[in-house]
Amino acid sequence: MTPFVQLWGHAQRSIELALVNRAKVRFIVRSDGGDKQMESIAWLLEHGVEVLAVDGLHAKIYMNENAIIVSSMNFYGYSTDNAMETGLMIVSAADARALRAYVSTKLMSFATPLSLAGSRATFAPQRQSKLAERTATGHCIRRGEDLRYDPARPLCDNCYEIWAEYGDENYSEKFCHAYGQPAKVTKAQTLCVKCRRQR
Image 1 (cartoon, rainbow, N blue to C red):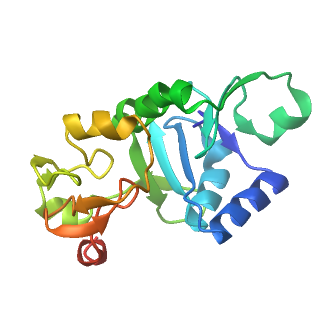
Image 2: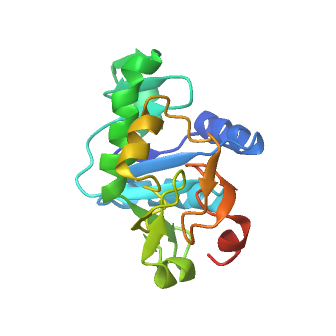
C-alpha cells in the first residue's frame, strides 16, 4: 500500500519473481496519484498484478504472509537512492492482526479495482463483473449465510472475528461466496470454479 508508485528495475524483477512463484501481488495506491505513476500502474496491470485505488490514501504499508512494514517511504525508485526514510517492521502475528484486519476490511472497502483502458499509460475503474451484476446477495464462505456480495468481505461478522485471529487468506472454507453452494474456497479465492468462469 503506497499512495505513489514509480517502479525501478530491481522492484520489477522482484515482482516478476513473486508472480512466477505464484504469489498473489496487490498494490493499493492513491486514486489521484498523477501522471507520473501511470506507466508503473500500467506495467503492474499488464503483468497481472491487482491494483486498487483509494481516494486520499496517505498510508505506506508493505506486508506479506510473514511480516508487515509501516514506513514513511512511497514505492519510488527515487526514494531508494535519495531519501532518508524510516520503517517499523512487525513480525509478531498477534501485533500484526489488528493492522491486517484494518487493511483487509476498512481500507479495502474504499478501494476501487483498476484496469487498463486504451493506451498503455491510462487506466480506469473496472466495470462490474457479469457475476456481480447478477448477484446482489452473497454468502458467508464459512457458514453459507446470506450477506452482501463483496468478494473483499466474504465472511459474516462472527466468522470474520474468528478468521482475523489467524488472518490466513488461504485457509480452506466451505461455501462459494456468490451462490452459497458447497465448494473448496478461501478468503483469497472466494468463488467456486464455475463462478470464476462467469466473471
